[in-house]
Picture 1 (cartoon, helix red, strand yellow):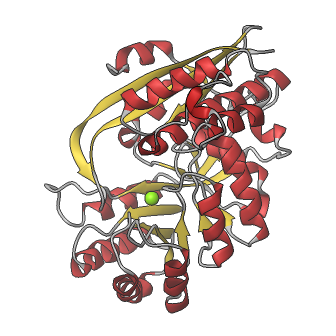
Picture 2 (tube, helix red, strand yellow):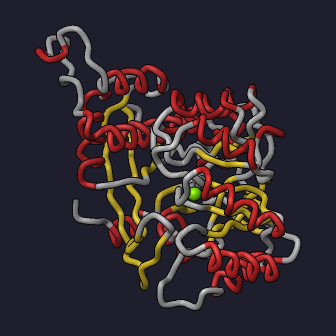
Length: 383
Ligand SMILES: [Mg+2]
């Protein structure tokens, strides 16, 4: 069974009101759906969270031409062939091996995103070919996977403590763990938000998602100030350029566990974080970069270093990994508010149900979802 075509569908839904993380403005919910077809009529679907969408879609189409004719079950062969294009190779500039010259270094995030989308589609295909869900394919059995709801995105026109009402609502709806966007405002303002949220959610687990606002010293001060609110983890606490040794210094100075990984592109940077001993949770996101194959490699290494996986978003995909990793997995992230991620909630038919704070995977093959093509037509972005 060989790959016969690869197609990308960029989707976008404008937000009614723009919102911020500490790091960036979001004016639309976006996603690129990736479709891989085979010469036997089987289809696999993957997705990419990233931008610019036009560049990623162009790369997906280009990669599709390269992998056309390859064995659709040979996901490692496909992964390595595409990844190899990011490095020089003998004769590569002449293209004498029939492949494109080395890919531009300035496009690496988009290249890793495009590779990831195709890889996820191949895992969906693999499950469908074997007629088992991906979690079963990995040897897992659990259909119930712990999940938590992320909220508290900054709306500059909303009251400071609007986050408390929002996250309290998630807990009232059955979630037993919630994650609050933090890090955009002064320490005093953040303490007001965190205190109000803790009061609103009672004993539920509370994680802080910081989006890289601090130096090590600033974060030590922040962590000591929020300690009384029983914080489950600090996520992505340090500036983007800080590295594992900086996380080690932070971890040594505070009592709150650290989580990191959603912005990493591949297993080699994740390896250095995992072996450093600084992290308690790793949040690699297969839909942003490098796909399910890389997420699986990272999860395996994390397990050996006592780091628990807690993949970033896309619970219908990452939930399969969490199911298969037992005690080495904490949860798959979801959004308590459907408006936060309207594409995930509208694109997939048979998406796993989310209730009682759990993600409920189903018995359907692959990732267990089908595509609502009417939704795709309605929200396809011009690319
Ligand atoms: Mg985050």
